[in-house]
Length: 208
Image (cartoon, one colour):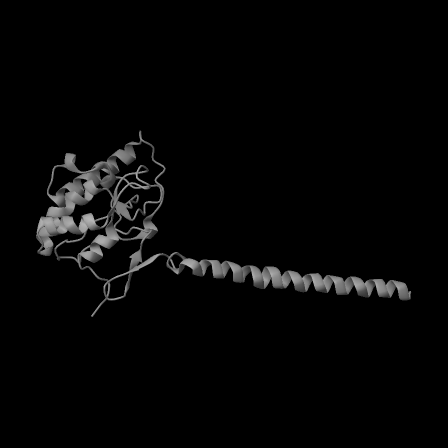
């Protein structure tokens, strides 16, 4: 009997020891290591936030939101790629609208949405629908691209200049300053950071 009790006690002590060790390793040490690793780049860890000139959080460097002017005010924003939704082909300013359309290249629904976007953008920019670049009327898989093509940015220069009191050359210079080339010199295409351009144009989310 004493031997049985002694064996049982040893097993209980061993089990408790294992439980305590795993608690320390899995419940304390591992979360601490993960947290410490996240602090190596707090910018990414906190959602890649971008702040405006007054220090207010203006958005994320990895999530694109199409900015919209106040009703009745001139539109001096650089616009992003569309988000799109079933009831609104443009779906501006709301990342919750992001969703894959599941529409293929032969989809009549997608073709209708693209034509609607093309007409809206052409009217906004005062150009022919044929002048609207492809990325202006289509979205990525996420629908939340933070960048646009230099061609789409250039299309918006006259409107931004006319509504912001700048010359087209000044606006283009701001766009050029926030244009990135191909990754590693050969992957992808040059891109323009929409949020950074709008902040450089003086747009802010802070309220006085």
